[in-house]
Image (cartoon, rainbow, N blue to C red; front, side, top):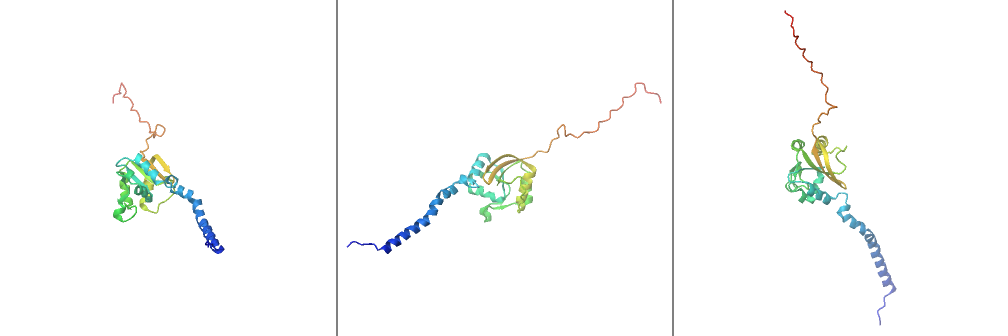
Length: 199
């Protein structure tokens, strides 16, 4: 005698199937968005693209600052392009300090290090420099103050919320003909009389 399913068993199977469809439908609907989120080119902070730019632009020994210090994660995630660059604010690596991005030098030490460079690469949040933002960290404040006050931007590459920019130290302003101070004319000595009068 053939095994017949009872209407109750068929109904339970249909309910199970409907439950599976209800649970998987949102996942399938969101799958394209999930794939887009995984694409580095669509992320607001495309660290891979910024690192590729760094690899193209930085030369061994070039000084680098991360502003705020959080953006050091760029060099941690993609270290190759930053090998040989001088991280001016770094005091201790993450591995030595037991932290993610390491420890930075104090404000005074950083000012001294910045005084010795004429150019510096900045990996920063794209809306900084110039900015009204006042960092809570004193070392980040020095980075912002010195770079914004003593350097001028020469190149900039922005990728979403992150930018790589080259800053060159400003030269002291040179007076132009229109701004040269006007000095009083030097008095010309009177020529001696050809026939001096006897005393």
